[in-house]
Length: 83
Image (cartoon, rainbow, N blue to C red; front, top):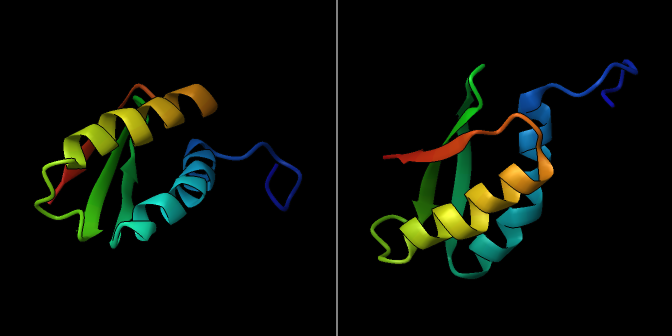
């Protein structure tokens, strides 16, 4: 619920899950920025720090971030990373 007692928006729910994932990403010297959450359920993120150019970033995106968001936030359809 948001502060006003209304249900949290899709973006707010995505932000909450990303905040839970963030420490694991930061532990490896990287970070993640939430860029956009579209009405169709596409979440756009940007990798920062050590994640930029890391060969494991695609796995982190699909297994660590996308699966987590889909499991915990109704309405998330896919997660894409931009530079």
